[in-house]
Length: 423
Ligand SMILES: *Cc1c(COP(=O)(O)O)cnc(C)c1O
Ligand SMILES: [Zn+2]
Image (cartoon, rainbow, N blue to C red; front, side, top):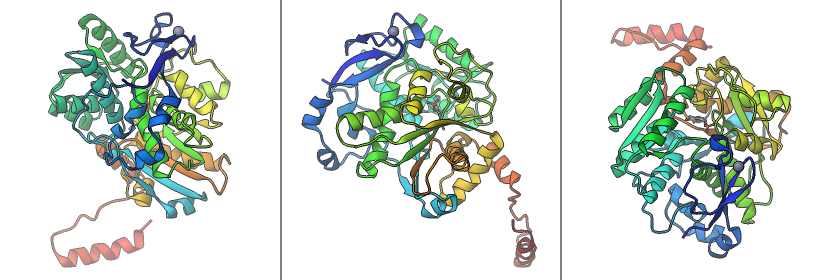
């Protein structure tokens, strides 16, 4: 048995038993997202930073002591989690902060952080005896669910906007999912998937609906803390669409704090594109996200394009309770961060991944950080997910390859010409 004690509605705070069969609070429908509660004393009695350090499993499942899954349940074979976090002193100096790390989630099996949630979704689907699992997604959650499902042979049905980047659609098709390209927004795909799941009885992995997705995503936060020997950074920057990742990062900090493994909680900064800034608007105006209506989202950072962030209650709490902030950045600035991050750290991120760096630059320019602050940015997805945006980004800063005849003289004159034009 897991150490889950119950599932608590984020709106009315009613707690349902650990074996509650629904996804959301019956009184609050799809707004009544549940938060998984644990018996931290019981966990601390059998697990400590030392027992963890002795565990040779480097995947996300090393944290299964703080997960809502039974000890006997098998986990998918793909290596999810254990991604590298790079110390980038030169970038920290350039930015004028104490220290900077880049957590590279592009190194996941399907190349985004979403593998952590989809792996949890597949495990829960297996536990409930479901024969099919489904999700809507801007692309990465879908690719993750498709890949993890393929690894255990679970049929899956995927709903993505028809405008999703080619690489993500290619992943879905290669993994053998039943793919619905929905002619509409992510919001439209979400509503259709929700309806279909209810009618056909498929296991519903949807973000900001299924309570267990946060419990998968939080493992990125636990890894960050463990990598730093449970000495937390001052701030963590994460890009935000539905708000599930940021809620997961916050949950990790709360778990570690409740276990007595960290003595303070880092400030959490949520970064949104100016074209998809629902939570920034709500943060600035002090609006109640339970009743704030959807916006119309439009951004090149497709993974953080959300008309109505589904996990907005947890997402707002992550920032407000940690004295962080929601920050708005332009698409142009996000694109500029792709080569800056790549050149400064060697990590190639898709627009939504690079946006964490853009947000850090914004926070520094607004005086929100101290010069001694130690900061982690989460690069949530690989640059290979969206090559078209990367090409736009490098063209915008005047980076061009040399186009030459295959001989040395041509190379020499091209190199000479380049010297004069180097930006
Ligand atoms: C999904 C995603 C995000 C945003 O996560 P939310 O939980 O929707 O806020 C950011 N970056 C990438 C690469 C993603 O795939
Ligand atoms: Zn409720």
